[in-house]
Image (cartoon, rainbow, N blue to C red; front, side, top):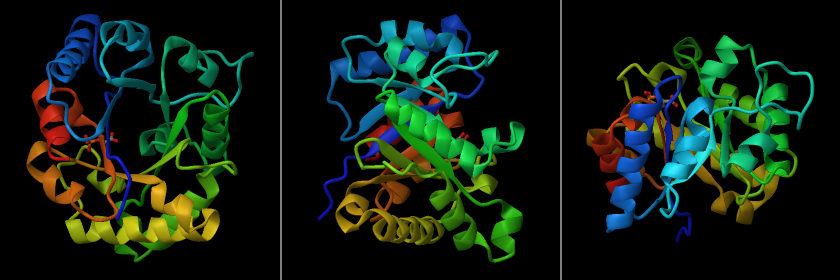
Length: 252
Ligand code: PEP
């Protein structure tokens, strides 16, 4: 019997100007306040430009706010970057690290992701560590090897169920409308939990949340979220509309 509470996390990516970002955040916060709340934790990760305003807009609700990335250092000469301490200072509780778009667009290695996750945790944030294989890697039969090596390379040494969430995001399913089948998702999630068991011990592995990400929508969320090792979702496109994100949350 699992005690893991599901987490539904919205990754807004580089979307949202003040008016629409605030309307989205307020729409979710109002629904949470009105109740009944879905049986999961809810998180939004707006672009950096909107974090402060979104934190203010959702005050008094249980909607958590996080960053989409962070630097591995607390401060210093890193033009354009944002430190975990800055995110925490704004009221963030989470930071996504190692999203495949960061790994591709900014050539982030597992070592970089691990350093960012470690720094996020040191600042009191929960690190959402993303891993996932490309289509070429899946077609080459490398899915398990890739996910195992990204997991072990990106996981901070001090990872616990309280300071770490894993997000399995097959790259071929992100923003493509092509979702992993329940069997594909469960197979990888179970393998990730088995690796976590070897690394952290059974008790910690049983408590750590592993999210699925990749074209999750209201109409496919229920069967994915019902899988034994799927503990929530990291949602891109469908997190940009109140009704869609709420619909996914209600599937928990
Ligand atoms: C993501 O960006 O993490 C993601 C899963 O995107 P989408 O839901 O749009 O596939």
